[in-house]
Image: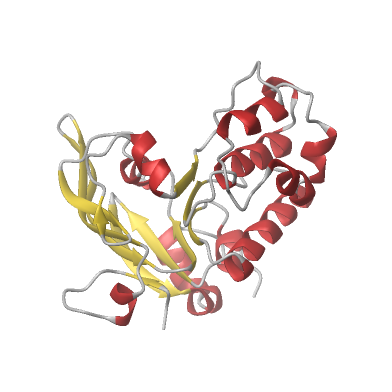
Length: 254
C-alpha cells in the first residue's frame, strides 16, 4: 500500500499513519487559480510530486509552509491544522523546508548558517551535519555566495535537518546539480527515509530521481493532482510518462 495517496473520505490506513495531510487546498494569485483542490496524505517514507514547469508544485510547497495565503482547504500536521499559521511556527512544529533556489544568506559562512538554525537537543548536531556532508565541513568558513551549486544545496538541506524535522519538504533539490552531487543527495534522502523515520515530500523535475526514491508519485497538472501512482508502475509505463509528463521514451531507465 502506498505511503502517500490522493485523499479519500473516511478512515483509511494512510490517514491513521499520516504525518502531513492536505485537503482541498486552493491558492489564487488575483484572478488566476494556482492550486485547485489539492488532496494527499503522507506517512513516513518518500512521496514525490512531479509535473511540467508552471503546474503549481512550488506554490504547493509555499502554501504548506505558510509562505503564501490559501483560498480554501487545509493542511494538517500530526492531526493539528496548521493552515494560517506563520512560517516560523510551522517550522517549529517539525516541518523542514528547502526552497527552490536554496535562498542562502550570501554573506554568512556555512558554520554561521548552521549555528543560526541550530536547536538544543536536536538529533542533528552540527558535528553530525559535517559527518553527513564532509564537503560542508571543508567549506565551513566560506560564505553562501562562495559555494558551488551542489554545496549550496547540501547546506540548504542541512539547514532544514538541524531543526530535527518530522517532515522534510524539498522543492527541486537536484536542480542544476552535477550527476555526482545528485547521487549524493539521493543517497542522503534515502538514508533519511529508511533510518531516520522522516517523511519526505519531494518536488522534483528529474523524473529519474523521483522514481528512484519515492514510494509513490503524484502527477500535478494545472494546479491539481491528476493522478497518484506507485513509482514502479510509472517507471514501467513509458506511454503513461509521455501522456502525463511529456517525457521522451528514453528519459527514464527501467
